[in-house]
Image 1 (cartoon, rainbow over the protein chains, first blue to last red):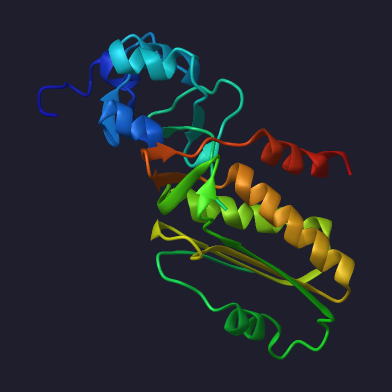
Image 2: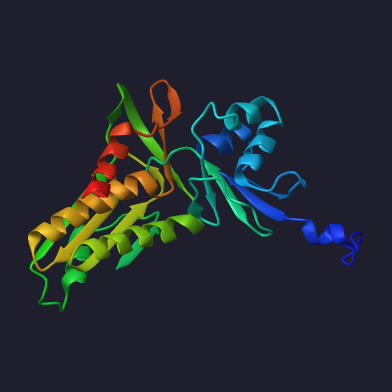
Length: 99
Length: 151
């Protein structure tokens, strides 16, 4: 963190988010969670999906709308596209099958 | 209202007793238990692994209970949902609703299960004779949950 000068304008726009993957996604992506700094052009959940899809291979397969993926932001499912804030916890998962 | 997400088993009779203890207004208690079946979509199931999203599960179930409490006149609600490795005939989920009258208890119990199945962040993975597979969500569950929107 020392490398970043907090007085610079760019620092203020950096958004750190935590991403969680569950069930089929966790297995196919081989990852259960990660912390990322959002690229400047990724400001909402739809763009985040596109960004993840662009990672190719299994990522493209899971995030290019071919498969049903649900999104929760801060533990609440979001239906429409939602703007992402610094510190958000975003979760991706298949339709639920409990009960 | 009491919601538990736990690995260990539960005892319905102890839970029912706890729910109405000391409350003489209760005239009706409806309950539901979901079990692991030994067959699903034509394959023998030997075991299931139930995964969930811990920080969301509790909040989500409590929100579902609050919705039920707004719609019906309930004295108490108890939900227990298990996670981890379960075998056929093991108990998965318990829902109990108590009320002064039976129709509120019956309807709330069904509503709670319909919403739990379509909203609570749990995922089942089955072990079968041909390997492991993730259980697919059913359209019939979505339809069961959506009927509560129109009433």
